[in-house]
Image (tube, helix red, strand yellow):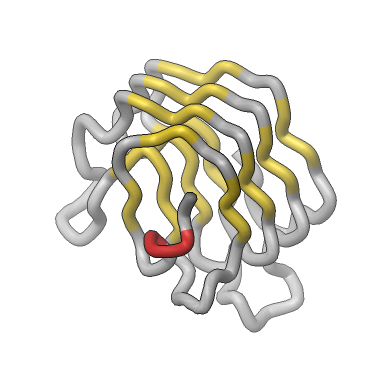
Length: 117
């Protein structure tokens, strides 16, 4: 979990499973606020069998790079009535607020789902 203003952090080589969320990058404020979580690297992780999401970029977490992760078997249940759980999720409005490269997954959700690769 990264929350609040977090910048330049690398999350790499982790195995995260059987939790509510796998890897969750959050921001306290909206994307236009300078306190957004940004320029972080989430790479070479495995997030499997988590209840809601494998890897999620929450509203305001922008300019992050998510690459070469494996996220499978997540999203057994939605955290609330308006979100759709998935292996990978980007809740930021497109154009692509985060860079998603070469990830292995089955499902994607959020406003930025079309940017997830």
